Image: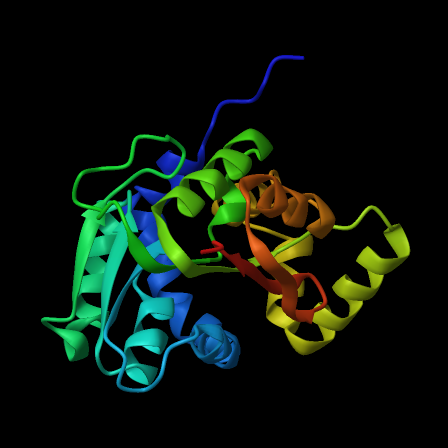
Length: 240
């Protein structure tokens, strides 16, 4: 079967779509703030520990801001491939000036730029891995493992899918009740909303497959550390 063309780059490098996303971001982040804070707390560092972490697919830096805020001696490298998103992120990241830098990196390739250090204390991804096809997810997890110091942790906050139609219907029912506006967009989308939604869901896969990718890469301490409906935080560490 012929594979459909990859529209992810076109969507997230579109000034119009990124501006729309940024305009909606405050509401999205209000709902995700607790999860960002929890992922920051999962990192095994004390308040005064100095460490460097990589935020892959960082977008405007919401995950980085949560970690930098909780760990005042941490330093962030934010990697993204969208100049539009990075430009918007520079504005959002100003409270942490001097403690972060952006790096241009397309996660859909395995070609890590030299601007990303060979060894990192931690890596996080947030609402981005689901844009990658299965083979690339598996490759990315192995690359993250190779870039971590022994004992370094990786956490991912992302949606998953289910093969159970009853479970999926329950997820939709609860989400529609909590966010009626999103239900309208899902049922009666504009062309732009439809393109974003189809791009969002096309590579989402079940949770157990993603955990197996972590095991195959060599991670230990693998667990689902938080879950609510289709959204999860899972992760593991590179053994010493």
